[in-house]
Amino acid sequence: MGDRFVSGARVRTVRHDPPHHTRLPRYARGKSGVVIEPEGRHPLADVSSQGRGDAPVEQVYAVRFAARELWGEGEHGVVLDLWESYLEPEPSEGG
Image (cartoon, rainbow, N blue to C red; front, side, top):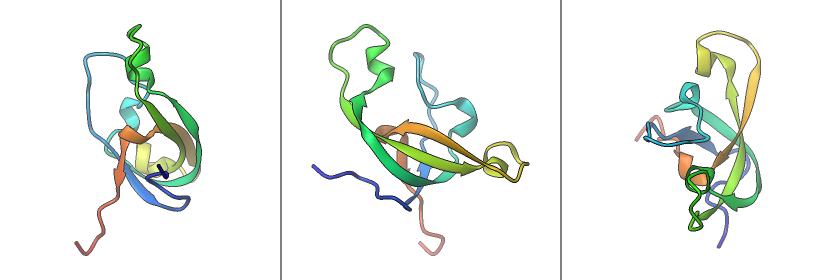
């Protein structure tokens, strides 16, 4: 099975507030970024942190966000390592 996102793909993080641990920071939820590269497949931390042995193994991506996108200011970029289920394709502006 191939990777869902390729380097350079524009993505948006999902907006969710689960009642358990998640590795998707609150400040990055619903934000747009660009995939830098896939970083390998790893068990989803949201599930494995609960002590369960059934964590799905997903691709983790390095995703770059503009600081301005995350916090409303700043001229630098921020890179987060995010599991595939945290990401969705960025909707095109025309559609």
